[in-house]
Image 1 (cartoon, rainbow, N blue to C red):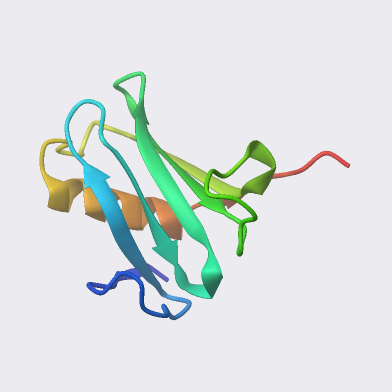
Image 2: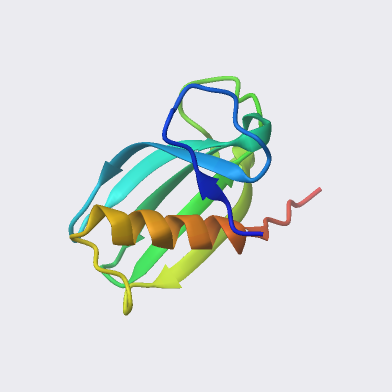
Length: 107
């Protein structure tokens, strides 16, 4: 299921929704937002070639997520993403969240 974007950040989101709270475009595009279930996510462009999205566990203990807080990751090539267009970046982030793969943790 592809997440739908909420236009009202700060409201309770259902499982299939996400809200972009901050987005910067360009060759160093980045941002963050919230998902249903109390989870959050961030994204950034890496090496001018990949869009990287990290999904964090619910109810983080601090304002800055740590590596152990990452529960899923997705990467996408920038080939078909217009990083100068906010709508294109938002759509790519939405699609990446839908396809994010769980992170395996060492025990």
